[in-house]
Length: 369
Image (cartoon, rainbow, N blue to C red; front, side):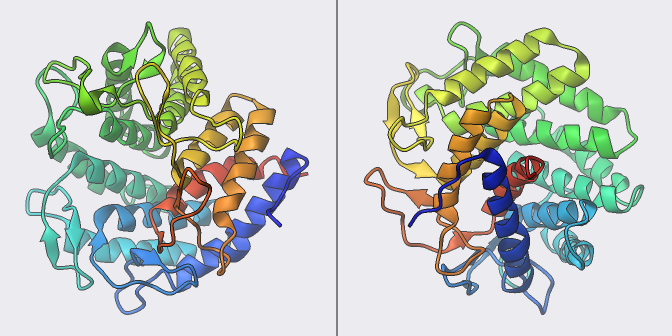
């Protein structure tokens, strides 16, 4: 029978136990390349590592996970695991210009040297978590990387991403996340300036103030692309941006930012299917369902936002939906994709999802009583 929760406290206890007793130990063992200290890209539903190249974001997200849980006092050995992975990551993924490449093989030989903004944001986030463990030890690395972002700057504001959509919101979202994390962990005033720059760009250009939604893709002048993929609205990103802008607004005393954050949260709720309580992958610009399938990460961002905005009923609903993705043959793995017919796609669990899961389960865990 599927797991069912009557209260948010019960949901919090179940998810915390899954994280601490199953997921973290599994990914610290089977999810680590013992010979090198780097992280595996995926685990099968039965907990076996799958061969293949390893993305930069896998290394940095998992470093962030294990450094964060170490800082939270959630088990022994996690700090050493994160530090060892970082010591492999930096010399193998860092390019001559100081930016980090996108993809390497098992040995750390670069397969795709492209320096995507997205990857730099997660490298900064990983460093911020390590800084919490060893204050003063990682900010020089982070400052050097931040300086290297000058090469990706866009004259009208913000940064360019690589690929067919160079002007997009998503990579900026994670850059804001990293800047806020460094503002808390570091000492350099430039982190606050970077966070303000990205948040102000989001309020001015990414968010459609009239419709109360955040768009994904833009032209060279940061005007919304309305055709094709330009009409894409992702409920999961409405929740993520709402969470970030609410935190930024509270820190700055910016009431208008908090209002935008709440409107984005409301827009994200339009993507929750009434029958299942799950968040769909995508909507059209009029908030009609565009892609009725449901990824795991969208459920975690729904839960995280509901907790921040104090919506206990929505949080319980989100926690209930998320649990279905975590009920697998090997506790500690997860399903990533759910089809519209309710069936899950049978595929290995991507390591990148643990970042999303930890981000939701940590604040949920405070509801245990």
